[in-house]
Length: 155
Image (cartoon, one colour):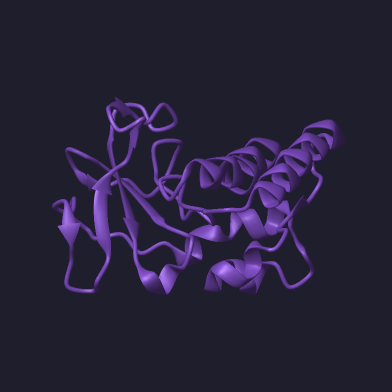
């Protein structure tokens, strides 16, 4: 669980990002040590729009919708549902799955499928998330700052 001090640091960081406006890089904080992907993009301590746009180089989605559970690569797949029951509001009309594994650290794959299979383009496509929002309530806040807010700033 993330410490209270770290949580308030993230609340402050998200607040500063909101006040800074569009196009500003988002600080990685001390999360870079928790994920190989974050370590790679956070060398300078921030994630900017260019790095955010390249995030899907880390995504690894099966061609077909995965069953719930651990696959042969050791990735745990679960439905990507808001509060565990509602369809993901950012990916309307598709079924999204979230994949996590020890090798990803705090990051996760997000893969979305329609009747034709994996959706790879457009607003319904999944994305690599620097922070898996399902890890903890604190991770949800970090996911907002590094994944959702940065996406909103850049696209």
